[in-house]
Image 1 (cartoon, rainbow, N blue to C red):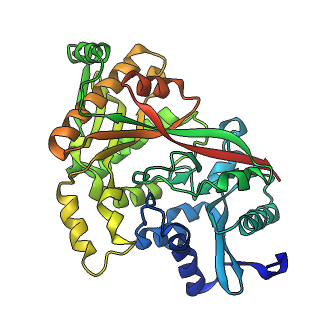
Image 2: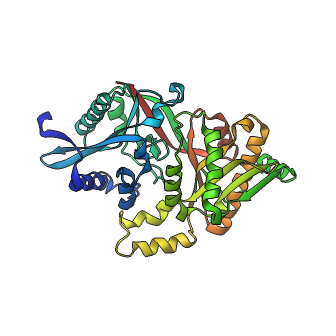
Image 3: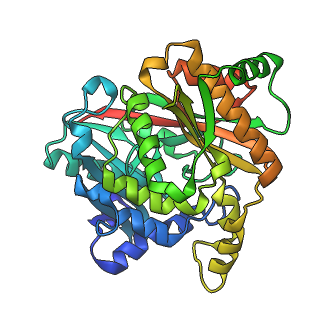
Length: 385
């Protein structure tokens, strides 16, 4: 077929929206390491009526077709909050994004990227940071290492062919997001155990479980620490109150008090660690649907998940402590307490930490100190328009 056979068009109407969501099954249906997402959740991300992200963002979704058959998809979008961030932190004025990128062939993929770039230029954008599906808080980066095992909850999966396609249209790596895996059934090295034991003797330190009966109060505490701890990080964009409520509602079913800790110093919350049972293990066989009886299976699973893997998606220590020894001590204490409960109460054997920025020396050092190894790398690219 020739270039003229390929048609790129904006998503318009329910049929196109369905084709956009369903296309993932065309691309990954035979991939043993792909976990089909719940289609209801995907619609919840891309529909502006459901996702508070769109209160401060604009997006357009596109499909590629040949002869009426879908051969690719992409989103083009920009976040008005990201535009207000300092450029040295990765986003900033004029920075747009694309995401939800999938294609069956290189021609479709490159045409979709060019179309997304054109839409962003028309909106006044001068630079692209991608992929982001849709925000930095959802599924950022393109999988470039670790194709041989499934992703954990809230992490993406892509075809290895995408990397040369993206780099072939002048995108340059700007940041690596790493995930680390570790065996959590064995004790940490003696040095780490001594650090934890020393913290336990310090009357100023208290490591507590969250109280799920005060879910939104606890969420506000964690958000306050997160915004302070991550405020200077590359790619950081503030989370709005409505987004906190939205994410909270989504995550509440997989939030367990044993798996989230808040560290207090002299009675003040100064650090937190959030761990989630890998929901992907629970939904992997659902093929994207809760019908007819998968909803009952999921409810049963959620009562007390018995999982292989626990994921640590978020962890933070307030900025004023980050350069101190206390920061790593609090981190090791929270990791150890959650590790014990993850093994004894949920049957977990494996932990995954991430994503972690490649230049986050503190977190990379903590991961290495507990004998973690990098198992996946997601690369974020940039290009001037």
